[in-house]
Length: 118
Image (cartoon, rainbow, N blue to C red):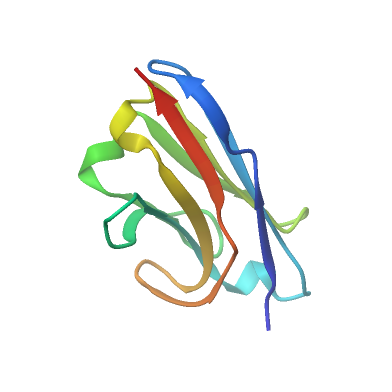
């Protein structure tokens, strides 16, 4: 089992940047694909980005391509989401998840709020 804790959310102006972190417990972090998802008010949770267990493959939803970068450090049991050129429509609670790359996830964090002001 994996426990996930997100951090790094906050309030930022449009055009700004944030880096989210997700720290995982357990010795098997490097065997999991990792993903980031987000849920805006009144909307369903949706996929943002994923990274394979080795970090060699990544996958993004179209709306964040060229702006967001997912990465991982298996030595630190941590996955990151670097978010640049943020837009108000990126406002959401962001969740990290562990499972099978790119779209099947079994374990979820509690989420971190990202608010982008215009």
